[in-house]
Structures are given as C-alpha cells and as structure tokens.
Image (cartoon, rainbow, N blue to C red; front, side, top):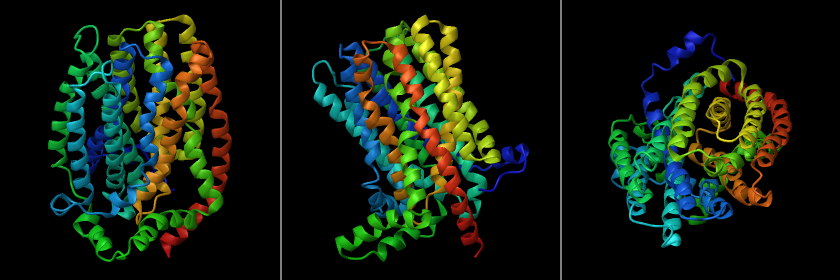
Length: 452
C-alpha cells in the first residue's frame, strides 16, 4: 500500500469536493444507530426493562451482520426511474432515507411500555433499512474515485466517512437526541423521534446535491444488468456466489479466512462495552444531560476530530501497525471505565476515559475502513464490502447482545465486566500479527497485477 510523502500532501488531498458527499453519507450511516440504539436504550431503561432485556433487544442491530445476503441485489438491480435519474448508488440511498423517515415518524407515536412488539418491529425496520443504506453508501465511497486514485484517496475517504458517522451517532445527531430527552428540555422519547424526522428531511435534500460516481454515469451498472443471465440460478451464481469466489481466489484461502476472522473478533471487547455504555453511565450516577454532553457531544467530537489524524498516521505507517496500537489502547481505555465504575460519577475521569477511548476508536475505525476497502474488488464493490463489514458487525451486534446478561451474571459488577472486555483484545492482536505476515505476498501480487 503506497504511502503519502508529507503531511502537507495529506492536507491537499482533502481539497477534493467529493469528500463532502462522503461526509454527508457518513452522517446518514451513523445516525440510525441513535434511533434504534441510544434513544431506544434510554427509553427502555426509563420504561423499566432489565439490563438483560435491553441487551437482547439491542440484538436487532444484528441485521447489519447479514446485509451481505441482499447486497448483490442492491449492487446490481437498478431502481426504475430513480436509477436513471439519480444513478445506481444515489437512488438506493434516497429510497432508504425516505423509508427510515417514515419509520422514525411512526416511532414518534409508539410506546414500548404499552406495545413493546410494535416498537421492536419499527426499530428492526430502521436497522434493516439502515443496513441496506450502508451497502450503497460504502459502494458510493469506493466508486466515487477512479481506480488510480484509490491508494491516495481511500484513507481520507475513510476519515471523512468516520467523521460523518460520529457526527450522526455522536456530537450532532446523538447529542441532539439525548439533549431533547434530557433533564433540561425534558421531552418524552416519542416526541424526540418526531423532532428527529426533520434531520432526515435535511439529509434527503442534501443527497440531491451530491455527485454521481463515474461508473453510474458511464452506465456500468446498467450494462451488468443487461448482460445478466436469464435464469435465477445463473443470476445467483454470477452475482452472489462469484463475489465470494473472487475474494478467496484473489486473497487465497489462508489470508481470506484470516481477514474474515479478524474482522469478527478484533473489536468485540469495544462492542461489549458500547452495548451497555448508556446503561452503565445512568447506573453509575450520570444524568441524561451529562451523557448527552460528555458521551455524545464531547466523545463524538473527539472521535471525528481525530479521524483525520488517524488517516494521516495510517497512510504513513500502515493499517496493520495502526490497528495493533489501537487495539492495545482501546483495551487500556476499557480499564479506565473499570476505574470509573469504582470511583463513581467523576466528570474529570469520565472525560479522560472518553478522550482516550474515542481517540483510538477513531484511529481503529479509519484503519478498519481502509483495511476492508483494500481487500474489496471494484467489480463486486457493494457485495464484498458488505460481506466484510457484516462480519465485523456480527461481532459488534450479535455476539455483543449478551453483554447485559454478562453484567447481570456478574451481579452488576461493572468493574469486572470492563476488565473482561479489555482482555478480549488479546486474540485479535495475535491474529493481526499473522494477517500482517500474510499481507506482503498479497500486496506484491496486487502490485504486479496493476503494472501488467
């Protein structure tokens, strides 16, 4: 993976206006996690549901781990009218944003205390549509650049996407949502959802202003569809099975499996912490207003701000080293949360823990996005990226769903829980070293292929 020669050259990369579209879509990717995650968690806790129940209901986010199943359809099927007018990627983005808007509006007239099933179905709908949205957003971020631009642009695209994601999940969308439902403003959570509909109106309006990838303007996707086999079985082989074959054929079985396992387990400890973080903050004694400011606004702002620094470091020193350092640092941050569980609601310690955690979370996220993009074929962009992102999400959502059950099993001992999440990084670090050794032959093959 070629490196950029100077930090000045790094800054010059960001003058490309296409990064603004990536920032916007990063926001659109992160914000739904507030809707089916943060706000819903506090709403359920306020309604009297247990930690175990909140953790298992949060498993609806596991749908992100399976969007690779329908990714080939999103990658290849062109929407009538919308596809011709707005392009393959943007048309799906607009459709998904519109569906989420309607689901959020419906959440504004629901109540988990009266009809939990209805609320869970709506939240699942938001998560499933958001997972579909991510397929097109990830493909857009890769195809908006020409193949020869990938090495220089992709780490910064990852940084802008990460910044946008944490703006949606944290210091803009998340902070606003929690502030609306906090002690100062005091709106009920159903009313909060009604307010948040307005953010989707703005997102949809701005999506119309984003550029169309050149693959769409050249009709690349339409050509794929026009030449697709007629039979459904042949279609599945070409557009569902072949992307997986191509990935292992290009990487080799050993590296391919190592990459997929690494994606699943590397950030499991962080995910376990994240699933229960809002419950922990509330139980340890922080108010909703304090959570809104410190965890969402301050924490999200730190993560977004450090994303660019993370991109520069990863470009200059490589994602493997970056991931290794980030893994150790994230485990250390989990130990700070263990100390916070012992000390209590100390805002200075809280800010220190968030500062350390969010800095290296940004570092790891940028490296992860670059890492996945590096192994993604341009021919099967959406499908392969969705596969790898889904495997990563499986660890973050499905495996982490039992985090509340673990805390209950420990008798509510948060300190021990956070120590366990810190230890979870060790298998991932060991596997990362192995992947680093396997990547050199792969990089050499890619360089030879590109120069031939």
